[in-house]
Image (cartoon, rainbow, N blue to C red; front, side):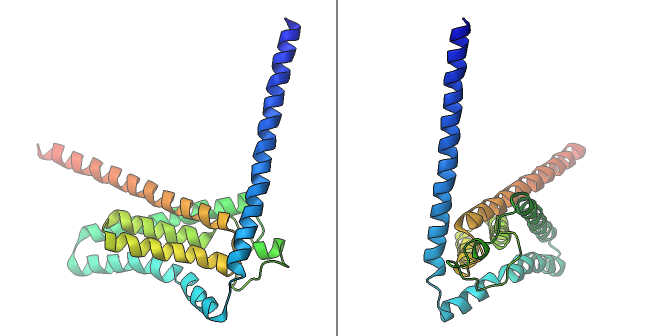
Length: 216
């Protein structure tokens, strides 16, 4: 019996070691893929492309704040309460996305690619100390997803996600983020928008149900 237990535990330990080995091997391989893909993007830099990407990367705040402010002003002019709520939802999404992104940055504390690979990656834009995930990408995907959920028309969805994707690409082009930073940033931003939208709809439906019950 003791021999059986020993063999069982031994086999179990071997499986755990194998899984851990495969896990860390995949991390190393993905890291190689991460930096190799970034090199290809960053090394394609041109002065004209750089100016264009700087303009795109700097569009995060004007668009992300401009849209909800525009909705609020429209609501003030037209007396449309729904625009106020949509504005509040978008701002709440941006706040949640920023909190999650900042928390992840300080949790993982990943150095910028131009710091880790100074001979391979050139920095073409200002960047803070933390790399993972991309704050610009998270912020823009939060805005794009939130606005698309509120106004689900193709002529809204396509331009918004094209813009957010270009911002993410610009962060790699300018050498300040890895592809994995951008990917996770997009996920965090989109998830923040979906979660906030669900919460706002839940509260809205609760209030409408309560209003109907009072009328009855």
